[in-house]
Length: 152
Image (cartoon, rainbow, N blue to C red; front, side, top):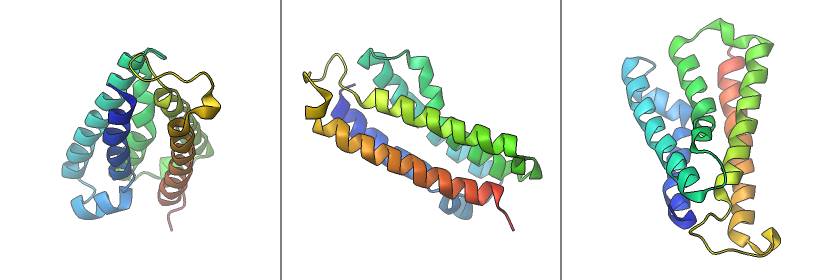
């Protein structure tokens, strides 16, 4: 999958995944929400897997790390447990977002089928998408963590 096609598919799907309170508000917190969200998560995972497979920079099995923090949020919302307020879970949640950023940045670099640049400093697509990826991860992690760990 070419990088531009990957961006066109991935960005809207990840933005839809980050609408946690909207999706749980529309679908509730029951099994229907979990089924719809995990169907979406499988589609997002598939898009990232195909990009990693065709890009040749990383094994495609690492694509699971891009949907792991989203999956953890929706599972924790479904089970609504006080267990997730433990600092260990909070640290693991933060580390899963760090893994998300690393895998996404690697997937956004030019692959075998994309045009090659001699220096990464000249790759404007990668630079802007890297900034947006870090901002997305930071804001979504903060929102999800606030909803999960700091319930009133």
